[in-house]
Amino acid sequence: MRAIVPALLLIGLVAPAQAVPGGKLRVLPQGSWTCEIPGDATVMPIAKPEASFAVVPDSSYIAPDGTRGSYLLLADELTMTSGTFNGRRFIMDGEEIMREVGGGNAQTGLRCVHAGPINLTAVG
Image (cartoon, rainbow, N blue to C red; front, side, top):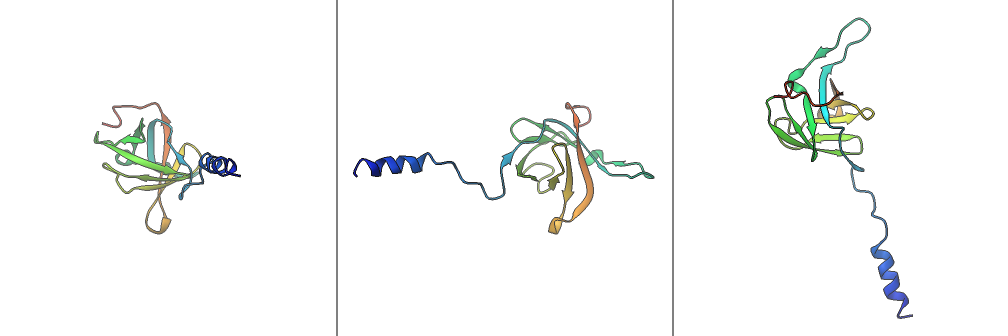
């Protein structure tokens, strides 16, 4: 019986971790993210270069003014946690599109789309 108790304790130590509140920790695809107000069949999208950014390693981004900040992506909810865009929040719409949300999780109308490799002239 004495040998069973330590074995049971060890099993408890190697049990899989439970889910983190907020969901699975993720990272965004690296590269440029272009932000715009979407259009429709009759209206062209309106580019918002001042809201665009580039994702770089270490859960970080570079704003158009060249400053660096960090972000946190839990499940499909993204929060900019430092830098120029500190406090901006988004909901992921797939892997390469995000929609900005404001107070009460209401969408602001802005979407950002992964546009490919980093274009340093577009982000500072």
